[in-house]
Image (cartoon, rainbow, N blue to C red; front, side, top):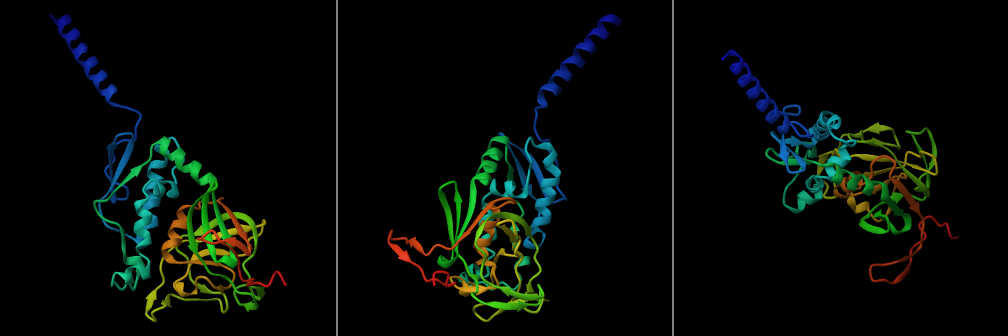
Length: 310
């Protein structure tokens, strides 16, 4: 009788062990929170993360970093901020809608963009599986940022396919003393081939002319607001870092002009798209082509704004 009881208990234990083992698949475990802001549950071959409190622009990057840090060791690929956001493209749309002028068009005045909610409570994010991750990584490898100075255009290509075209402003055709560098500088935007080498996600706004930092800006409608938090991208062209950035301007009336101290300026909404299509090492081409074809397939000769063809 004792032997039978021992045998019976052993069988029960083995059945329980088999059931427990079979329920454990190779997957990311169910975890309650990421910095108390996200919960996660299984969803087909991908994982779903639920935002459990409102995330503003001010806390947005810290929040994404917490997800990447938490789950990178649990994925079979290198998890990055850019990969996570591209797998959840609606985030880019939401970030674009923090643009001051988009909000103005909706009769909404935004004094401080950093206080705007970009990941609302109840939203869900997917953590991509290895198939989707590889697709996005392959896309990054094929991406080129193409800027034609006299055309005032920035285009994003994937191989030969044009994904986006944005208006930009470029450097002025003059030389000027800049306190930031401590010397006279040629303000023309430099031409050549290179790559994205760095970005600043919470940039300090500094006037190169006097090297003074500023915190507010006068908009095109003459209203004053706090400066937005949108990443600045640093380029390296022909192996040299000229301090030539791709960054948003709070005055889009200057787009389509030679207006800056050498940087490539975009509007706020477009800057988010460019940032999430241009991780570190993304190829950048800055050219000066006067002969182009317009949207009507007509050949056009552009104005020689830098007088290179004199």
